[in-house]
Amino acid sequence: MSLSSTILEIAGLSAGYGHAPVLHDINISIAQGEMVAVIGANGAGKTTLLRTISGLIKPVAGEIRHAGRRIDALTAPAIARLGLLHVPENRHVFPDQTTEDNLLLGAYMRLRMESRAAILREVEELLERFSNLRERRRSLAGVLSGGEQQMLAIARALIGKPKLLMLDEPSLGLAPAVVDQTFAILMEERAKGTTILLVEQLAYQALSIADRGYVLNQGRIVMQGASATLREQADIRRAYLGTDANAAL
Image: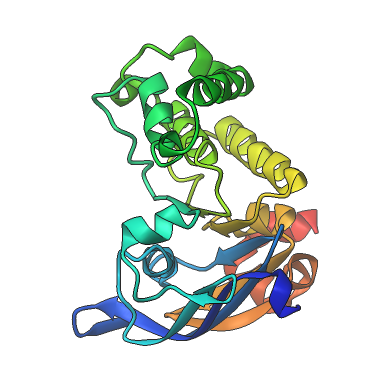
């Protein structure tokens, strides 16, 4: 992977909460236009990894670079302004704002440089694309279903024009049909050239749509490679994919 194509590079990263380290010597690279999956069991450190990249947790060692620029000392708002946008676990939409207003809040940083009319056109395009949201555009986000809130959280990030879209367990708590819809949207974005870092417990589904993957176990990267290669690894199949996935392979 050439340096010029690398949008995110993590080297020797260790991070955690107070005196309790969670991540240990993490090394990850993501190229422009890639979809990279991070899989692992609950408690492996997946959410901590995204929170550290986003600036919500400060590393105790190592470096995080975006397009060659070191960002690990920046604040979370500064990192977001660079276009590294985080869709957190459990969605975290603004419950007392409408669906449409949530989308406008996602474009807040763009409103300083672009016309409101242009942003509103993109809101309409997103509402057409996310048809369930179009029907609920005037509804408060807090009364949307879990699946609708997930769609809204993704759409809100997309209107921010992410240079890197980071998603934390987007399938969490969703019905299978909504999970399929969510992963279809991510594949569409990957085809459009959006760079995606997908943290996901549904390992089989994640590795089915990602270009490459990293396996996180007890805060350490224990395996990495092309998604198809990881899916064929006996240890990965046994630990993360389950017997049904083994049969599918």
